[in-house]
Length: 304
Image (cartoon, rainbow, N blue to C red; front, side, top):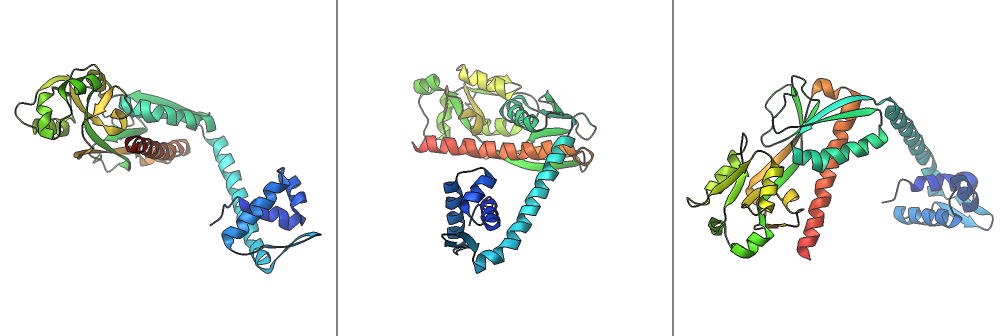
């Protein structure tokens, strides 16, 4: 395989007949042109030029490749013009909603990056643990967790799988010890969530045995995390978040029963608007890449 960007160097040398002239047209060093041509030929497994003291001439294979390279260049230039034009056109307001932890972890940095490219797009972020009615226009885009919305008027996209486990304050773990099994969690008090959508976590906690106690509840993930960090008890939370807090200790590997999917939600009408569609796609890519980078970082840390 080769870098498609190398076609620029190939075309410049083919058109000028020398790496020196090509380097001037591309505004790069002559050595860079020579190196990229060599890399391209090695990647393709064939010589594209015949070298002589008078310069470079296309080989048979190089001459056959030239029209294809020129076609690619035309397509790339057309794409650049199209993207630039779309970037100039994108404007308007997008209303987004999700829970506080997802807003802080993903939406804020994603929107900052997006607006650096599309400054005419304004984002209104509504942080709310309630599920706003997207179908009725209370927001344009939502990040939701758990079961997918069942409204046929909504367009949903699965963007993440949140693996969860039990976390405790480091000092509490040192005092009570790291359990060897779930049964050992009986020595820990628990903090959990209040409000709708907490059944899965509560069922898992209470399944640990009749002596398990939930001593504190909070209605947001950030509050549950704060309670755990304060030493009020053990808490179930996404590994993606829990692993990032140095004051917390994960007691077990990710718990398969507590895997929670995350969804990007909008409507067909909202998605037809170019600025909403562009931000929707950007957030989807941003979240997936952010999760992949974070998981890779912690896998490396665990291995060390």
